[in-house]
Amino acid sequence: MSSSNDPGSSGAATDSSGSETAPAAPKGAAHHAVSFAKELLFVVLGAVVISSLLRAFVGQMFIIPSESMENTLLVKDRVVVQKITDIKRGEIVVFADPGGWLPEAPVTAAKPLDNVLEFIGVPTTSTPGHLIKRVIGMPGDTVVCCDADGRLTVNGDALDETSYLYTNPDGTQVAPSVVRFRVVVPRGRIFVMGDHRDDSLDSRCHLSDFSASEPQGYVAFVPEDLVVGPAFAIAAPFDRNRRLTVPATFTSVPPPAAPAPDTPTISPAGVRC
Image (cartoon, rainbow, N blue to C red; front, side):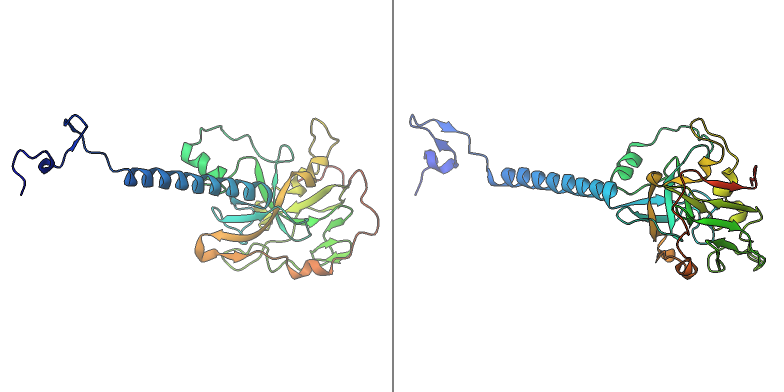
């Protein structure tokens, strides 16, 4: 049995001279914590990189800022836009302002969290300088408003737009357009319109605009390289979650009769909303 002055009874280690030394700190727990922190950091960084790559090359989420696409899209809906497919007639597309379509918005400093969420593809506010409309005319298409029954025609084929045009609370539907025009869409550009035709400053409303670098009316036709991509789904709010498909009426539109011209045809001269 050990006595009270037995060096081993205190639990302290002794060196070769018999002096006590401090007990060694356990290394397992600290090593595990550091290892876990590194793994977590790699996972977070990997998720951010993957999200950023997906946002840059595959898909991106946008928040609807206005009433111009009602009732197909409502203000603050979050839509997912894909970047890996070609543009088609009838699709809803997000595009950068071709020039003068949007008023200059006041510059406000974004919060750090907003910047982080936007970077990884989860926006908290609408993306400045972008619009969303439906593609009515592709390069070379002749778009006319309107035929004897008040319908838009594309390459001579009348569109039945009742499935997506805005319907008023009293049940009446807006007209396809009260602005009369005939255009031929130039090469590399598209002609777009909102579904809420009475509340959409779309291609029709810029057919007489001037820009610093192009002749009158060119800015009405959106360059294809400014298109982010077609919106294919409403992601939120969850009670509105659904796919966005091309209306059946666009499947019967024939191809243009001639190659897309370098310059658009616009008549009558001076047409505007």
